[in-house]
Image (cartoon, rainbow, N blue to C red; front, top):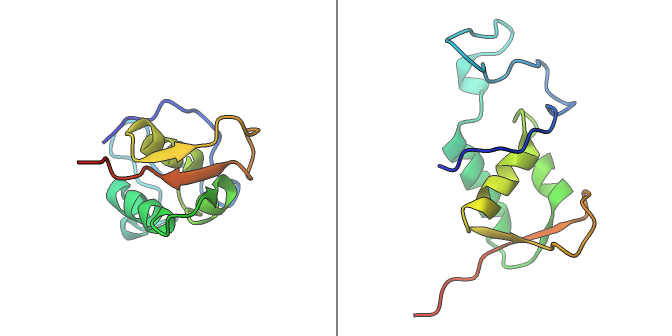
Length: 106
């Protein structure tokens, strides 16, 4: 899995600022372990949203990850891994278009 280096603030919809502990096994007593999004779950959610072949707005993808501490980083992890493309000519906002990379021609 690609390590994220984008450092945006946590989503304002998160019930707790400590969804994922930075170091050590500290647990958030407010949230159960099963409520935390796992990296593979996040990847599946995003790839499923992009699977239609049409461009999806960055804001719509972020909305699919309400419990993720850094949803923009999760989207850009797919871009960094070569699985998604972004419209680099567009402004960096919620309307930036993201789409799945086409399959390589054999």
